[in-house]
Length: 199
Image 1 (tube, one colour):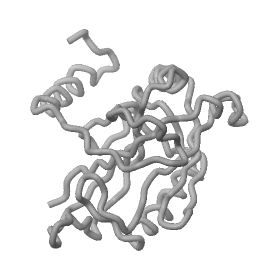
Image 2: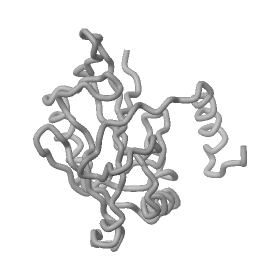
Image 3: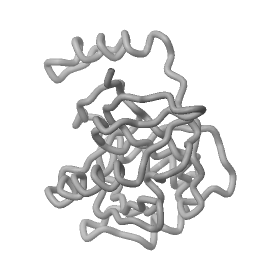
Image 4: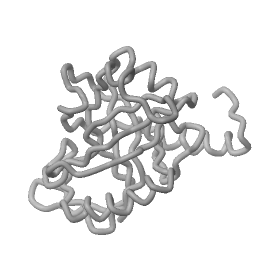
């Protein structure tokens, strides 16, 4: 059965990058590891190199089309909500078995929050969101060929001092509150007309 698969890596941005690396728009750019193939990650899952290569090649088209946006915080949804978009991936490439990405932080409400967090050395994570099924193989959960990459989001993760973008380690999957799915559905219903009441 296909399900939402979330993988999080610690992603502490070096504040120097925010002042030195700029997109043509003048927005800050950050760079770091988005994913790693051929390892058992912190969630006990294994993504093959072939699987990631297929999905990265498809996602590069999304990057070219200027649609590679992501949210601040993870919804349990296949939809990228534009009201929560904080960043856009501008480039991505392989470095060994690691996928590296160049990310522009956008001047949206969520992007301004993300920028303020990283400027103040708050530990954040970068997290892939996709749909797929898993197969138990020994002690690992192997991600199956029906996997589809949706996006990368920025999320909160436990602090990992000294873990700058070039030395990111796999984080642990965020524990979802048992009521978060209900809250998400209620929010989608209540906010469907473009205005959200305070809940």
